[in-house]
Image 1 (cartoon, helix red, strand yellow):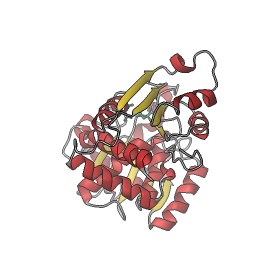
Image 2 (cartoon, protein in one colour):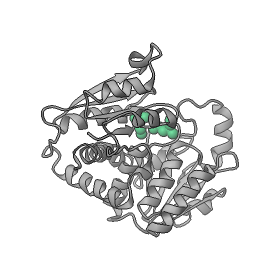
Image 3 (cartoon, helix red, strand yellow):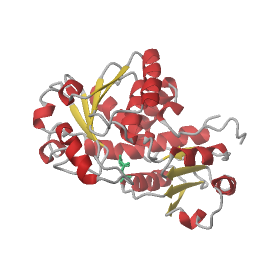
Image 4 (cartoon, rainbow, N blue to C red):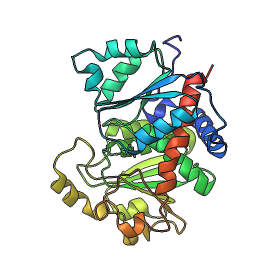
Length: 310
Ligand code: CP
Ligand code: NVA
């Protein structure tokens, strides 16, 4: 493969609006005919590397790569690969001779950017401190299933507006033509650069992005209400964060301000009683189990698209 032509998925805006649409359409098709697409027959191997814990991402990539006819190489604790101080650049050059794609959950975004810059095969972000783009593909697939579209719908995310999920909702939601509202207090507001980038994408797709501090204003009339943990992997200060974010809990009272047909998303794992109440997470508005299932279909479509595109 020509390294200059290889495509990576490191952040949500690595897919143009048309490309995101293509991947989501493929995901829907692959969900309908779950065992009918085996482009990795041979089998081709996909490396899936974890520097942080995971349930859904590990399970869905493992199962999904197998369903594509491929072989998943799951590596926990990437120190088993790089623990002798070997540079990421060298690991990328070793891996890309042997696998069809590299999926990595790690810490800083710069690590996965270094991997991609040195890899002749696609590199996929399975969560970094900054972005969680595979999750947003699954979320958008879920929204399309529930509403038949994403364009023009309002998605409100309340809580830690500075974390990976907030950043990915801003970029991925704007790409999908959604109106993305972040509700977060001072100190938890989105990064200005990410917000600006999302605004420029939204200007082209007919969507919009805004960050507010009032949770009710964020959720007002929203079609999708999303929550995430208040304490992301690697973050300290749990007690302070829980205190600072309690007013942003997704509960029945807050949800009453959303559209009557609103659905609730949570990427999981959920902490009932903190960012979301049990009655909401386990209630009729919740789409979280479809959302978790769609990790499988969306990632199969993404890998298929990245690896086999001409
Ligand atoms: N939502 C998500 O990425 O779950 P895991 O951290 O369990 O993979
Ligand atoms: N924001 C969370 C998402 C977990 C899937 C974290 O980074 O821990």
